[in-house]
Length: 342
Ligand code: P6P
View 1 (cartoon, rainbow, N blue to C red):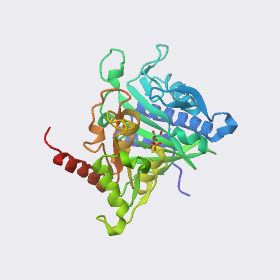
View 2 (spheres, rainbow, N blue to C red):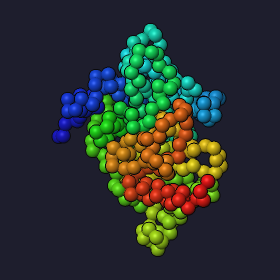
View 3 (tube, rainbow, N blue to C red):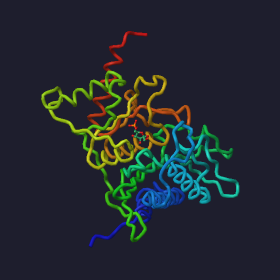
View 4 (cartoon, protein in one colour):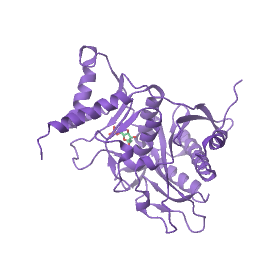
């Protein structure tokens, strides 16, 4: 029987190989994984745990908060604040940063998370997940402020998500490829199932919310129209479509079998670059996808190169199979080149 490799053993052995996972970062990842186990248990209870439905409040995004959004946020805060590995945390569900209280030791890492992504799917029993991103606190003994979080995605030292679906699976990168771990509920530990995830460069499957088609910019419209023309059109092949409306689930499918995911800018709110948040949705997912051989842009530049201006800023997201992302990005460049000089 093949030996089961736990998350802890994987992290310890990775540290021996190239020192990418110093003890404090290993502790951080294990604490986040334990918190995700607790969130998974709460999600799995559903109505039996009295955790469905809305909390009667809105988050900083102006979105109605689900009870589980708040529960997941509290679980992650409580699990991480005392360990001494963090200086502060930031969450989709909190307006400002959460500085580790003085009664606990301060660490060198900053943790950002979307505690429960896709929460509109909670009440209808569709996969949801937790997304997390880890940065280093800038050097210096001064305290920690929001501006310390405003680092481009290429500065991440760890990133991942936990998808709460038919399996509870943790997906992680520390910059040396992507590994997947499924929760063995009998043992209560995450077990390695794949340690070299690769996204095929080509695909026949796109993920986008088609109901927004009339609002898209020309390059996105051109790309999807060509996919819909199928084998008789310029692509010479038929495409399939998936849209789970849970980024974690859509990205997990792409990491597992390829595909392209798009939540582009659209003209409904022209001043908003996109719907998804840069710091704790797009950046961690972009790094995972790139580490698995895929690509991630906002239509114009690599997502990981974007210099954040605000903690909760949004971004247009095009990610997945490298050749498809490059095609959509090239269509944006073609459109820009045709624009009359300003
Ligand atoms: P729409 C979930 O609310 C989310 O932030 C992502 O997980 C998901 O990809 C997207 O929004 C779905 O948006 O407009 O299709 O409901």
